[in-house]
Image (tube, rainbow, N blue to C red; front, side, top):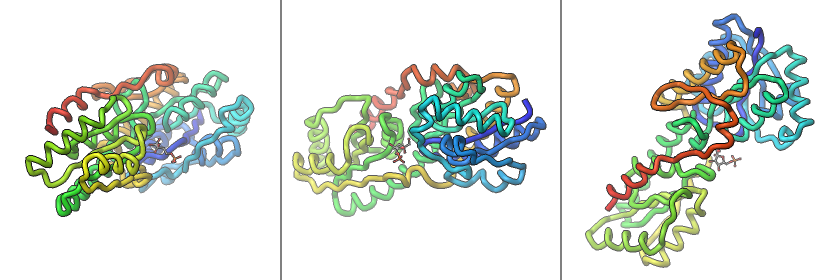
Length: 319
Ligand code: F6P
C-alpha cells in the first residue's frame, strides 16, 4: 500500500484532529502518502481530496473540531454514491481509507470495503455509543465540558434554592448523561436505557427538600425527552422552582482532553497498521485499556452496552 486517505464524518468530536494527525504521521513514518478527504463522504464524492504532509497536521493536536471538516451525507447511502466515491479514490490512486466517525460513518466504511475498497473505522463521537469499544474519541472531553456546566449550575441552583434539569446530548445513548451525572453528583439521572417513574423522582426531590437540601440537579439524556418539557413536569408536580438548561452543541466543541488525545493517537496509528497488514472492514477500539480491532459489522450489528453498574452506583450515592 503506497497511498491512503483519511476522512472525518458525521457529528464532529474533540480529538478527531489528534486522530487525523496520528494517521498522517504514522503513514508518513512508513513511507506512505496520505490524502485528506474534506467534508466527509460528501467531499469524497465531490473529489475534495488533497495531499497531506507532515506540516499539514502540525499544531492541531490540541484543537477541537476537525480540520478535514465533516458532513452527514444521505447520498452516500446509495450504491451510486459509493461507486462515485470509489472512482474518486481510484483516480487519486488511493488504496485504503481511514474513516473517523460514528455508526453512520462505519456503515459507509463497510459498504466501501464490500465493494472491494479496504476501510478502517475509528470511533469518533461524543455519544460513546459504538458497540465493541469501551470508549470513543470525544466522549471524555464532552464529559468534562458538561461537568464544568453542572458545577456552575450548582452554584446558582444553591443561591436560589432551585431545581435544575440539564439536558445533555447522546442521541439514543445515555452514556454522557450517566457519566456526567455520576461525576457531577446529580440527584437523578434519566437515560433511555432505564425506565423511570415520575413519582420516584418527585418523592426523592421532596425528601431532599425536607432534609434541607438547597438545590437538586437532574440530568436528562436527550434520547429520553426534552429537558424543558421535563422541567415543567417537575415544577408542576413538586411546586419547586425549576429551570431547564439545554446544553446543545457546546458539548461537541473545545480542546480535547489528554485522555482523548492519547486515545485518538493510539487509534490513528493502529488504523494505519491494519491497512499496512492488508486488512479492511475492521474497526479499532479499546477494551480494558487494550487496543483491539474487530469486524466493522460487529460494531454495526451488536448492541452498545452502557455500564449499568454506574447507574446503580449513582442511585446509591444520591440518596
Ligand atoms: O452524534 C453526536 C451528536 O451530537 C448527538 O449527540 C446529537 O443527537 C446529534 O449529534 C446532533 O446532530 P446535529 O449536529 O446534526 O444536529
